Image 1 (cartoon, rainbow, N blue to C red):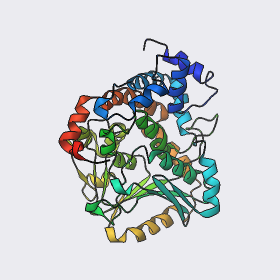
Image 2: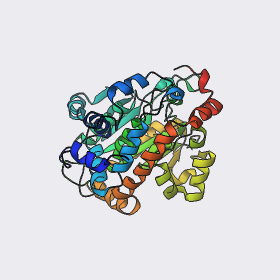
Image 3: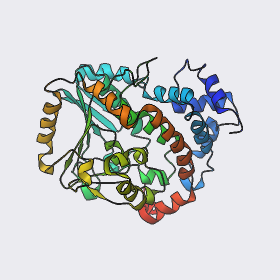
Image 4: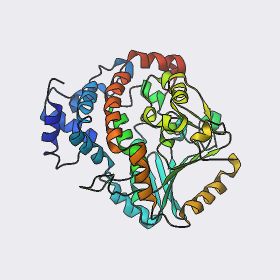
Length: 379
């Protein structure tokens, strides 16, 4: 960049004494260094435009973050900031402790025995992820991890209202492609999601002043996969400790048809299915049926769909009947070999740069119109 991104990061964070989430970092950066990052007025003017008509001002945010993340000190500091609980999470924790239920936009949290069940909710769009769901989903995860009465987090899709699958549970359809085409998803959404919500599933919550690989707040996180896990919801599975799938369910990563990078799947999927199948899934759209040999490399257990409720009860009992005192230590030990934080940080630097280009590429619009008939869908 024409300006010193690392010096700017030091200025904005007070030499690392302040933990700023990536959206706050870019907002304050625009105020402190006018012209280097798009300001609130510029972004507000762009926000109502369909994606094809945007100027790509947010690419500067991608360049900034991509310049910070490769640096072990600054990039590590930013990764740790994104693993801290959201500011309002402890307020919602008090509500959950009192009622045992928490309703948020995009997510519902309730207790079932020793587990916190996090239900992913966007029923009109097959539980797709978008700007209306991300904040509530991450907050619900914070609360589930902070809750002293829960030993396990279970992710499950809600019952949907979409005509084809009405009345059935669906794990999720990935990013909301209709909203993406309509320009309703900002570039920073990707970074907030993968540095925040998804990485918290994998690493738990950070503690102030402590490196996440030394200590933190974490619990086993598992999924009950029904119908399908497309795109971003398949990415979520790769960050979990255990996946239980219905025998008729499937997974896809249709990045080629969408024109974007599928989060951290490029980093994580080869560990599960090997590099060739990973390339087939990401670059050629290969479907992975959960009951297939390749699907079972991701899914730990496959059960009849009609028996999912009972299977969840069995799984909760299995993972909590002896306590989970060693769960955090074992998770950290596993990560030390498969994906230490520094490796993730370096990957996210590439992701931040390349996703900014993809998000504003004419190819994205062409792909969505060709494969999704996006021009004729209503928001």
